Length: 195
Image (cartoon, rainbow, N blue to C red; front, side):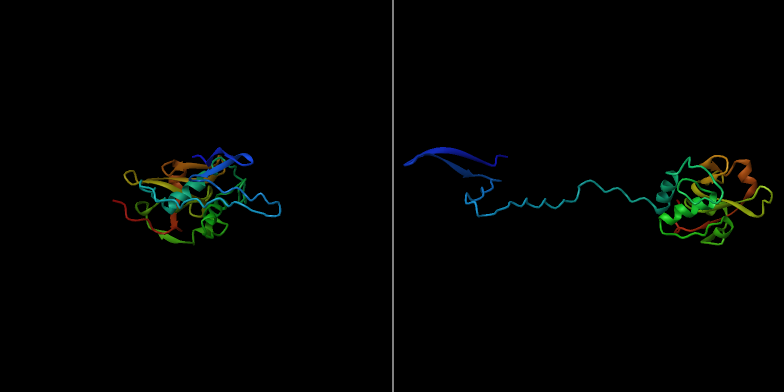
């Protein structure tokens, strides 16, 4: 858009330039040196709502999982609470703290937090799952976060800080975890019922 146009016209003292006003034209500042003037840019028009439907916000559990996955590959270290190294409970604590949930540092103590999840069939994404120790499968020694549930197979996938691979995802059907599964706790709100 043009800011203005000019043309010359004859006058008694000679030719002088005349500026015409058009849309968007800004009056030039006064020629007087003792006058200070400034031009303020107009405010941008308010954004109109888009005619396309807005994206549905992700469930909180999906946000927790997405955040947990950003640490995939971070190495394991006993007692470490992140973000450059984690042990299993340090990892779950760090992830949930990002969303305003305060967990204790140890997996055994985390098993006392939140709400009990009675069975595999009741699991949902974002639940904490607990496993027994190597030497004593009845004593909690490991914790992870459920990332998906396969109702048909009665199985789940979880993300955790593993001693062998750092932060990674594993299947509950792997023999090691299948034999040591103890239970689950729910920290997040319940999701709507699945159809």
